[in-house]
Length: 420
Image (cartoon, rainbow, N blue to C red; front, side, top):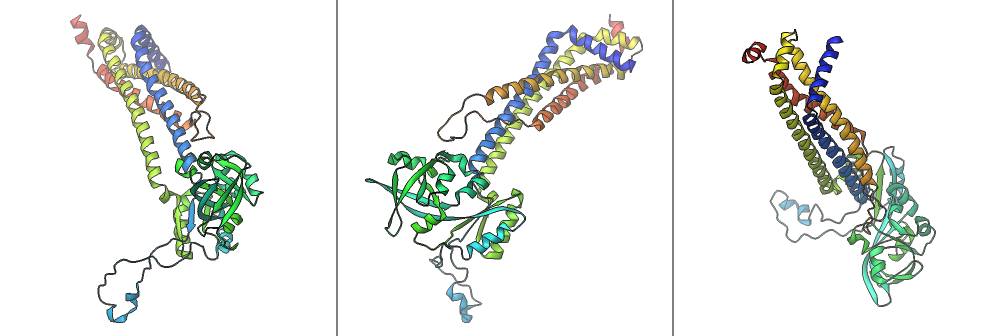
């Protein structure tokens, strides 16, 4: 214990005697750590924002009846040519409906499955929005508004009105903000929906929603499931889509395969549907780590250079220490402890500054029409980032101090004293 205190005391004297160089080395670590905290907090906040913008509105599994060509063409049923190689040109998709057969029993079955948090129906319909002389092509989706808000945070994208207004009005429509602006519509106005058969259905605007994606906001609107069935002139059993939310998103791939094989439907899991988006998120995280680690490595080289120069300037001190009974390992510990002290001081300051700057960024106003539910820049405070930053600071400074310390250990005090 006494030897440790002596070594620590000598290290402190060395660092204080060259306070300017010590401060520069510590600031290098501080800058690297703070940059790491700020970058990771902001990039993870940005990724979380984009995830929320895309993935929160995306079901874990989307079940529908896909239109595709028949696997077996008529020629395959002729035994005379069953063993020959046949080429069929201009294959047309088989005649089928968008309707999911026995949709309600399937929804009930999924809702009783332990892995499923909720399964809800949707009815997709194409049509035209008509207001005065204006006519726009659009997509009308029938939903269970309260269930959509509960499972997929649908209410977060409603800028005016509420899911309750839509749920309680069988003749209501929640219009995309892009459509509303183009047609100069307000809440309480009426818009006519023309289906593909030419029939006109008047609906009352109960609210507006904004997804942040212009292509969706300029065409999409939402009504109740029964209203969408009425627009299509279909029965109450007509369901085109089933959206499934799981308790664990990692079960989506296996569950989608099970649904497709068991019920003969197309089931797309969230990872397949958003593969490119997840790749972009991974690349952004990789860039953040690469930039931050590079800054810490630069700080490590700075510590190495300062300690290396300190050895040359402290040659006499090293010789005196060895002459008075300090071993080479003791001298090595002195210089390693100096590097560790620089790492601790610089790392702690970096964590504090990184946190304070992150809080500052988190309170900067950030308002955009594309993302109505965001008011400030997104920042994530994850304690894992702080632990990683401190560990890397300690490791990098230890390595930076180890090499000069090894050199100091091998210095022969006799040659130094003889040279004096």
